[in-house]
Amino acid sequence: MANPSKSSFKLKVLYGESDEDVLATQAVSIQKAGHEVASALGRKGVEDALRRQSFDLVILGSTLSRNDRHHLPYMVKKAHPGTRVLVMHADGGRHPQVDANIDTGRSIDDLLEKIAEMLAQEAVTGK
Image (cartoon, rainbow, N blue to C red; front, side, top):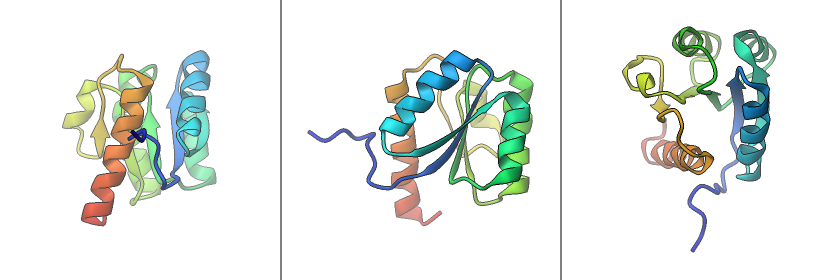
């Protein structure tokens, strides 16, 4: 059976965390799933990356502060309105600028599955 998280569509992903170890290990896993990944350490790193280039998806990891996970989606959408935002925290479901969320503490496989779901939804809706 094929791995549902392995996508034939390669996304350009910006992945932000405040913890360097989490950032390094998770970024490698996202890359192994077939996506191009740029890593950003902390809020400033995410903001700098958004100024330099655009992305298909911005993932805001659970080690970012609650404040960062709240404010960065607005900054993403302001800088690049078509960019999708996935927040790794349950609060993300209530945020008007967040396209998807996953609970903190879920596995990398769950994150990759959520990315695959977003791609499938995008293919159906054309968003």
